[in-house]
Image 1 (cartoon, rainbow, N blue to C red):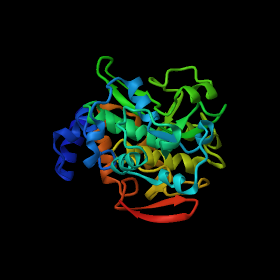
Image 2: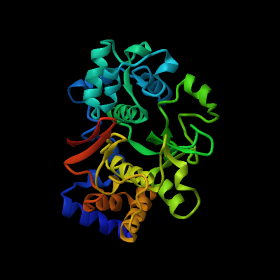
Image 3: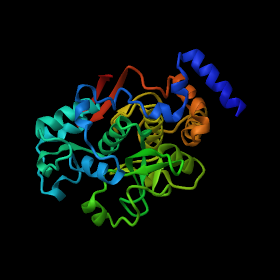
Image 4: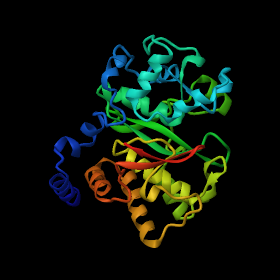
Length: 313
């Protein structure tokens, strides 16, 4: 406890943060630059407040790009580009352009915004924060998409006040997907062995508990991929929830990248702090803000089928 207090004092002095920024529940109840709905905040009015119904709201607003045909939708190349939207304000703007009805009104699949797992997690996170519920998006790997594989994925965590714990929610898993994937657990309380944050995956690979090539998506697999998700998850729990193909610093590496001993030690520490819990929150925040190779810079590289592109945030 003494070390955590020391980290808090140094952190607030060095980075000019007040005590709200050093209290995890107060920190995660406030929107970040990505989850701020901006002038579209009115779209969050009148929404349900229980997790199952909020997940339905998100599912009725978004269409996963890889599942579109399962819902009878053939996407044009133009519609596929909607997955490039980073900020919730722009997401809500586009949702409104597609269908002007409130979010409480279910949309047909063809009128839903095209996104991916990250978008389901981030939109739910934004709604929960607006409702006064501490929430954060997590980047890592799901064990429930392909047997004996850990697939690149995002979920949302929220603070369950009555149970005094963080609960993981997969807002993407509607009835159709749960049936197709034969999901046997509640998507409103995802077991910790079914979704591994980037830091946990890194630790498992580093200690030989799992093979790096079991982690990734499509033909992109390996320790370099895990490293990128670790960096992305660290940013997400510091309220910078970027796209799955946005890269910077030690997260901007190829799938086959081999970190140096010094880099590996730094990443080991990042993984440890990303998983350490609320007691190490101030230390985690200080670590992130002080490490240029991990902290999100003003300009990042974004990779897509069209190639690399520099993006100013």
